[in-house]
Structure formats: structure tokens, C-alpha cells
Amino acid sequence: MIDAENLTRKFDEITAVDDLTLHIGEGEVFGFLGPNGAGKTTTVRMLAGLISKTSGTARIGEYDIGNSEDMQKIRRMIGLLPENVGLYEALSAYQNLDYYGRFYKISKEQRQERIEYFLKMLGLWDQKDLSAGKFSKGMKQKLAIARALIHDPKILFLDEPTANLDPEAAKTVRDFILELKRENRTIFLNTHLLSEAEKLCDRVGIIKTKLLAVDTPENLTQSLSGIKTVIQLETINDKIIMAVEKLKPGKVEVSNNKLIINVADPELENPDILKVIETAGGRVQLVNEVTSTLEEVYLKYVRGE
Amino acid sequence: MDFENTWNVVSKDFAIFKQKRSIIYALIIMPVAIGIAFPVITFFIRNLSQSSYVALLPVFTALLFWFIILAAIIPVAVASYSIVGEKLEKTLEPLLATPLTDGEIILGKTLSVFIPCILATYLGAVVFMIGSDIISFQNWVTFCILIGLRPSIYL
Image (cartoon, rainbow over all chains, first blue to last red):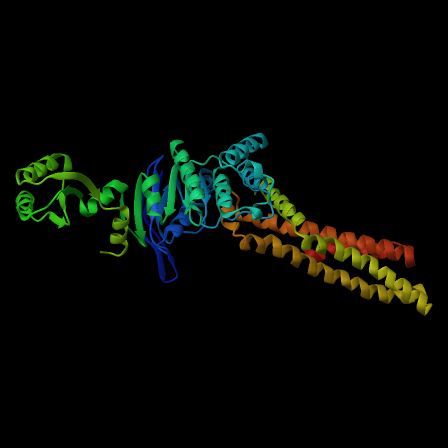
């Protein structure tokens, strides 16, 4: 659905996005992670046709972003939630949505229907005649999401949809994104909230001018340090440690009364480990599996470790 | 060029103008106040100096110049909301992501400033002419000059 090849954007001497190659399938929720100034917003702006690319190519569906005729077609397919909501504060919530609906040639009845549907869904229907300037940040954000959806776009670009929102409003927005995911829309989500990416995204990409990694959150977390089995024992002694070390040389850490063992396939290896511990006289209280968090993966890539 | 899109931009701007008191003042109160004040001033000049109608003509010509100044002031007040407002409220970015073309935006913005300004100056001019025609001239010469000249000044 979104295919970028060697997409690059330079601002004078500064390269904002360098050689980005990325393929996002239909119905996929793709999370774009990266620190401030990493090129996330620039990428979205290029893909939405707000700024031109310096080099490379990108296609949305079958249309090329470099071609101005194609760009008109792309604009009908995409919905954009920019970093700054950009609502007309003097106009009411209803007027704001209606204004945008007209550009997509949606009939009056259909506009009314859709505006009512979205405003009710996002809990803003009672405030439909209130000017957007009187809205709280969360309400504005929700209204801007409704605006991005008014023409039923196949592809949604969401630039930090939950930034600056209180936890409750952020959850409403997140739940709404999950709802959109069920409707099989392709969603390109810029965020620097890793927990959000983990909850919402099918795949994530980590960018810092260059794209550093792309994979599912699970694969990324496992690729960093593999899986660890943590075994809590009643007491720990050298005999037990030696026995486990013999089975898994160099993969064992000891912390208090816990053994932390790197395993490749926990289901296959854990029974053997436990058997060795039992034979050595250890009493197992608890067995846990831990993987590194997306945060660790993110920091590793972003710091270039 | 899709004129429906252009008109949509214009009508949205009008809806915003309605909410902004400073624009309403600039569009209605200024031209009307000048339109009323000038005939009243000439009325007193004539009464006090006992001068003939012909002697008043240069005074009117001088006062008409104010309508040119008005033509410079009103669009500034209106355009600052119409164009700078979009930038300030950061509404340009989502607008550019719609199928609206640049030409449609520019034409829409031009019309949304041109239409209210031309109407406002006409309004002031009509008030001025009716006032001065009743008070002193009993003819429609200046009225015709204003109606003929005004659009060329804006364009």
C-alpha cells in the first residue's frame, strides 16, 4: 500500500530523511519510532504530498508521490492527522468537519451522517455546536482524528496522536485506533511512545534519519538479547550453579536467589534445566520468562550501540 | 479549477469573519462612520462660511480621498485574518492534504478578502453619496465616480 524506495529529503545541508526504503501492506498498522528530529514528521509530510522529496521514489497504492496528477488521487485516499491539530478555532466542531467533508465531494446527507457517527463515537456530539477554540487538548485531538476520517480514507497518517493527552484521553484515542485497525485501514503511526507502538502496531520501524530496523515488536525484542528464563530458588548454592553452568555454559547469571539463563527455545530447554536443578538439590519456587523490552531495543538502535 | 472548492474556502472564511468583532468593525463601522461624518462636516462648513455649492467642490474632492485610504486599510484588517490566521492556527497543513489545489486556495483567499472589502466600501460610498447629495448637490455625479473607480483600486 505504501512503498518507499530510497526516499530522501534534504533541507539545505541537513538531511532529514536518508535513503528510506519501506513497504507497508494493506491493513497494516505501522509504527514509526524515533527521537525528536529523526525525520518521522518529514516522512509523513512527503508521503502526504505536503513537501517534495529530494530523491528516491514512493508510491501510495498505485500512485506516485512525485507526480502532481497522481498526488490529487493520493490526497483522496489518505487522511492526515498532523502534529498540530490545526482546527479553525472560531468554527464549531460540526463546521470544522463539514468544511473538510465538502472538499471530498461527499453529499450533504452523507456528511451529516458521518459527522454524527464520528462525533458520537468520540463522545463529542453534545459539543458539536461549541467552537473548537473552547475544546480541551484531548477533545481537539479527537476532532482532528474525526476530520482525518471524514472521507473514509484507506490510509491514515497519524503524527503522534496521543502526544500531550492525559492518560484517559490517550486511551480513548488508542482504542479508537484499534477500532480503525479492525476496519482494515492502513495506518502509519508516528510516535515516540514505545508502549503505544507495542500495543497498536503490527510492525515498527526505528528511524534516526536512516531507517535502523523494521520488524514486528516481538521479533525486535527477541532479536536483541533472546529470551531469558528466570528461575527463583528457595536457596541457591555453588552446586546448583555449577550444574546449570555445565548444561548452559556462559549463559547463566546469578542474582540473589535467582538464576537467569539465556535460552533459545524455552519450551525445549526449560525442562532439562529444571531437572538439573532438582538433581542438584535445588527447590524451584518460580519460573518466569523475560524478553527485553521494546524500550531497550529502541535505545540500543537510537544510541547506535 | 473547481469553483465549488474555491467557494467552500470563501464561505468558511465568511463564517470566521462573522465571529471576529474587529473584522465586523473594520467592514461596517469604519466606512459608514466616514460616510456619515463627511456630509455632516461639509454641512457645517457651508453653514458657517455661507459659501456657494461650487466652493464646496474642492472640499468634497479632498474628502473623497479618504475612500482610497479606506480601500487600503480594510483589506489589511481582513486579509490578516484570512491568510495569516491560517498560518497561525496551523490549519494550512491539513488543508493542503485535501484534494484542494493551490490555485483554488489562492483564488478562494483572494475572493474572501475582495468581496467583503468591495461591499464595505460601496456601503460607505452609498452612505456618503446619499448624505452629500441630500445635503448639498442634488445630483449623482460623485456617486457614479465612486462606483466606477472602486473596483479598479482593489484589483
